[in-house]
Image (cartoon, rainbow, N blue to C red):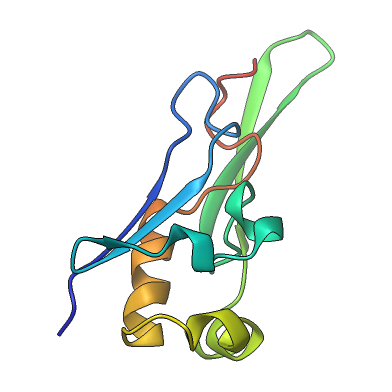
Length: 109
């Protein structure tokens, strides 16, 4: 089994500004990720948080689920996943572990 590491370079307080890095057995496959995805959420299924200001300017948090499950995500991303020598399900799991949604960390409050 290949060792897969998918990381997002964005950090608090600006989680949304970053890019994905993908390594398989230590080799960098980040360039295989389509340009449209490199600086966005990877779209994997998960529970995420979002915030909004209430009328009194206090911050209100809520949770929601979003994204594609493993099989649908693999099917949608097959074209570029085929160029990576690793199990697509393991790649999904690696991205899902670090996936995010814009506004989910609250750093922009």
